[in-house]
Amino acid sequence: MTLRSNAVAVLTDWSAPTPEEEVLRKEFLEHLATHADAMYRECVPGHLTATTAVLSHDGARVLLTLHPKAGMWLPMGGHCERADRTLAEVALREAGEESGISGLRPLPGPLALDRHEVWCHPPRSWHLDVEYAAVAPDGAEAVISEESLDLRWFPVEEIPELSDEATRRLARRGRAALLA
Image (cartoon, rainbow, N blue to C red; front, side, top):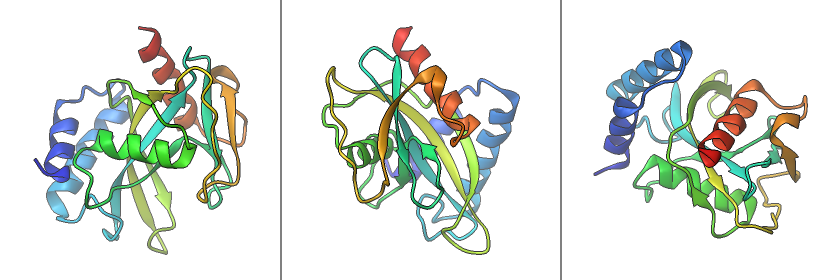
């Protein structure tokens, strides 16, 4: 199975929890059908990405990165690479690289979809983001990577204003999945 076929299977099988995400799910599948390079950064109109909300072992807190380009507190995430086999693998790889935490335990997902404008290909490009969650081991210590200005744990219900609703939604859904 290729990364692209995995993405098609994941999005085909996923039950969107909101009407807005159902629209996105269909748009993502159409993008995959239309663009042979839809999984990779070089796809100019937009490309699939994967994000992970890294939760504390008890689900009370979420680890966010102060993203240098966006200037916002966001979950870990990023671009697919040629060696990646699944979207879940992309999400977990990015979370480990950006958090410095080993032993992250992925939760079943995806948990959400988000589409946002980015700076990959000016004047306009889009990240078609497939979002997951993972649990950090008890006592895990984050290490700031080159891709972050700062890393901090925030209570799930107290994500700072300098963030977005997609981050808040993913953190809440991740906590719910952990506690289920």
